[in-house]
Length: 64
Image 1 (cartoon, rainbow, N blue to C red):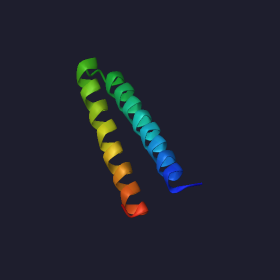
Image 2: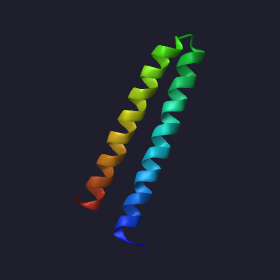
Image 3: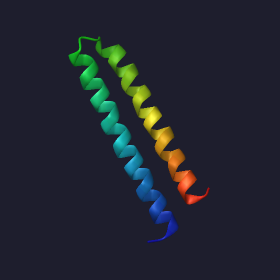
Image 4: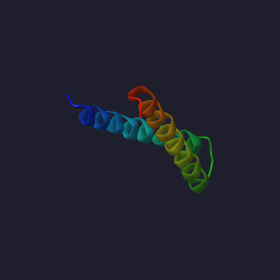
């Protein structure tokens, strides 16, 4: 697999993990009785945080 293919695979994994994390946060927050709008803000924060961490790890591992 080429370097570009590996980076694309990592990007897809990062997006998938981030979406799952955001959905879990949204579901858990709404079940705890939080308004949907506030839960959506928490989910967006979880999505962004996961993307930053995973893409940062990709840059670190691939060396730029």
